[in-house]
Amino acid sequence: MALRLLVVVAAVVVVAAASCRAGLADPAVSALPGLPVAGLAVGFYKESCPEVEDLVLAEMRAIVEKDRTLGPAMLRFMFHDCLVRGCDASIMLKSRSNKGEQDALPSYGLRGYEEIEQIKAKVEAACPLTVSCADIIALAARDAVYLSNGPRYAVETGRRDGKVSAKFDADSDLPPPSSNIVDLKTYFSVKGLGWKDLVVLSGSHTIGSAQCSTFASDRLYNFSGKGMQDPSLDKAYAASLREECEPGLKNDTTPVVMDPTSPYEFDLSYYRHVYRDTGLFLSDQALMHDRWTREYVERMAAAASPDEFFADYAVAMTNMGRLEVLTGDSGEIRETCAAYVD
Ligand code: HEM
Image (cartoon, rainbow, N blue to C red; front, top):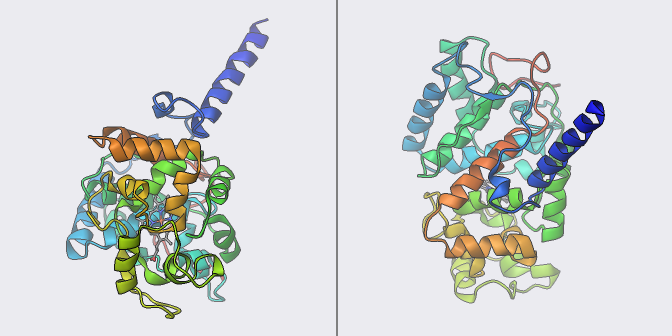
């Protein structure tokens, strides 16, 4: 009887946690953290390297003061680390035969490799062979948000670094900016992330920029392969984008800010843009094509305060930060984050 009760209770906990993850629960309820992951904890280094979070923040501050475009880059970096083989810093590994994650199409334009190494060197000097690169990536992403006036949420640490990096994984696990809502939800759900994680984490596009080549064809010049502008894109916004991105250029690296009203401010304006058809990517605008994600966009677009978004963001980043992590004796702690896999 006691065993049966235990099984029922365990099943309820698992279902509740899974539906919370999937974003199925009431938004108020889904603010509860999901099931903790063994080996991860806030303050994991409190005995072994108590100064790590201060060191990362100080270094991030110096990096962003020198070049503010690196803040958003470091936030994107965590997404690319975590969605591919989990948050294990495998994005830092190099391949001499161009078969690593760094060589994959979705890694195009990714920046932050040198900065992660720079932060790691500072941390190594204080606490040799103690803190993983995967944790540094997660802490740097949080500080990028914080230094853009976003929330300074608690970050779980205790991850260890992987030894495998494959181009194929990055090519297949990262959604392209041309994704529709069904594709986006699929890319996220295979990783255990739900619609709420999707719509909340997409709010990261409230800071930073994208190169013309990532959206100009889809949205301005060859929508659906028809040689025209995306009819759903706001006309005035499209006209301004056309001035920045010339037609016919294949690899146009011109950076275009994703949130023209406040490109370095972590705020609600991403949702206001998506609501007004001035989201940059098809994947941003796609959030309006699903009942649940649309309702969230609408609510955030109308919100007077970013509090709900900030609280949701902390939960969604925690969920992403738990993906397929290596803990305990798995993986390794390297002296430098980059290493050759072949
Ligand atoms: C939902 C699917 C997503 C798609 C399709 C997507 C796609 C992209 C693309 C194509 C760029 C432009 C890259 C460039 O031109 O250099 C970009 C930039 C960016 N993405 Fe995403 N992204 C997604 C989700 C996320 C998530 C979950 C995060 C963070 C948690 C994120 C954070 C960023 C940031 C901060 C930038 C600006 C980078 C910079 O300024 O250097 N994105 N994204």
